[in-house]
Amino acid sequence: MKHLFSMLALFCSIAGFVKGDPNIYGPDGVNLGPNGNPELYLQESEQQKQNIIDADESKPELTIYQQRNGNYLINGSINNFPLDFVIDTGASVVALPRKVALSAGIDCENDTFVETANGKTPACTGKITKLTFGDFTISDLQCVIIPNLNQALLGNNALKMFKIVQNNDVMKIAKKPND
Image: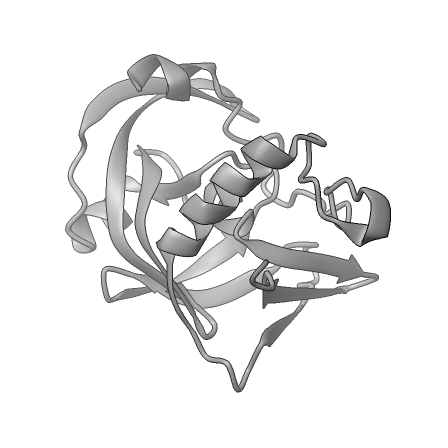
């Protein structure tokens, strides 16, 4: 696991960009997943269904407006510790400043290094018991803890569980429909 995180490019920029639905669709609109491999997509979908523990069905979609600096910010919490996330589609995993991780009760599991926009930096891996943003809650999610990070990043290991659409300066996040 240590080497896996070392190999990942954590994030290209703090803002990132959403490129619409990355999935490949087959005949009759069947979702084949982002790689066109339905077996792999089904396995990933089952894991995603296990991780999402709650979503308010009366509010199926979250609307977020772009900030003046180009970022999308969302209020949330980690293990009931409140914080703001930058939505970062360029981040492979949720990334936390060390101070936030300590306040949320997340311990370092494995030391590693991550590639950031500012170069290679020491970090460690951890596990989030409960992550919330908007009306969504995710359980048992890997994260990376970076000492010199200033802002919590909501990365792709969380975002891939949702349908994300960006249009001009508006981002909409919705629970993926059950297949």
